[in-house]
Length: 174
Image (cartoon, rainbow, N blue to C red; front, side, top):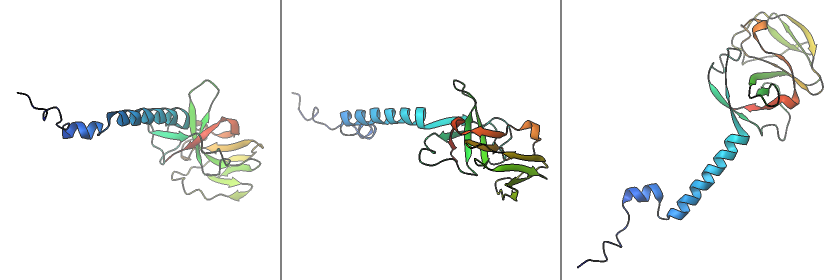
């Protein structure tokens, strides 16, 4: 003689922890989580790998960081921001550099120190100073002057200079 008590027995505690009390609700949550994650990591947060030592010591070589593509939706890039700069449309190579010069400013290096419009700029993020000597360069109206933090590297080993606003992908997080 079978009892109905076996059929009415609640699911095991493990099943309840994994699935919850309502499996349809749990499935809906999983679908929403996957969709939000896809949109977030495909269109908002883009991973970038650091190659080379131009951003040492703040950003370690071969480290992975994320770029917030929505960071400049409501304001323009600011001095001191670390940004990802795309090379060309269709390519997935990006440079990670710090903005030091804003549109319309003059940027120069003397004895390894940065001068903006002839005034020395305090750069607390530069831990490895160098001996760069560069004549003043005028930054265009829709450009930003970018350079790495590792000023101990030779000038020719750096990717640096004016970057068009349209090529700035977003702000690097962390």
